[in-house]
Length: 274
Image (cartoon, rainbow, N blue to C red; front, side, top):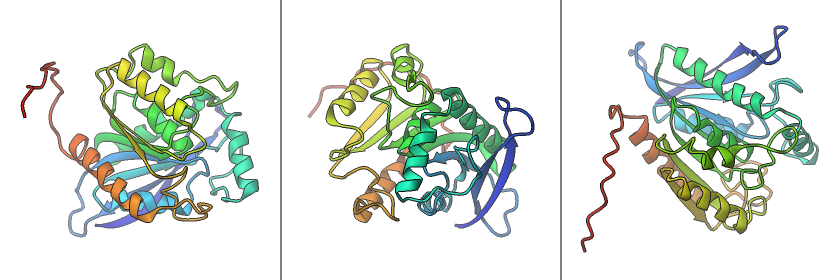
């Protein structure tokens, strides 16, 4: 499918005084079908809406999804992407722990509010993201409107260090049952990811499984940022990215691409057969 790109400057409630967040929206475009409706998707990353983020979102949009990409550091600077160099990385990491967790959550909520308000969105919502965006996609799963989240190399979940004070409650909310019986979650990590070591991945997996969350946990032979096709510092794996992308599409097609009706938990044990 063809795609279009636009943006919306959406007022925030936490900041007031006319402060807005810019949310870029990449949508499918089917000529001669002006009333077409598609599922919605939220997507973000620590460097804001960079070339790789836009291209990744465009690939998803071309499969039939309206993708919203918020500028996550609107409190500190404009909507322009941060560079992938040392200075840009330092700024992103600085902002990451200066921003309130509740502000991240508001950004997510505003992105979803925008999606469901668009005439080309059918209101079925999923989330994805890389790095910081992976953590934000994880937190998006707490929103009952989000039916599935695919999280790429999500940082700071295992250490609970997202946001101001470096004391987020993501895993605590899982332990409290906030994801139990909710949508589907996919966690994707590279086994050589220095940002989320094995102990951290094991903690995330155990916490999710102990809470009976519907989760798929993928560990692949890759480093951090292996899906980033620009200035990945030698870590981009195009073949692996293509393979993982098909997994993402299967999850989204099954959970938001089709209307399966309300979930009915039958709690049936699988039959033990060969």
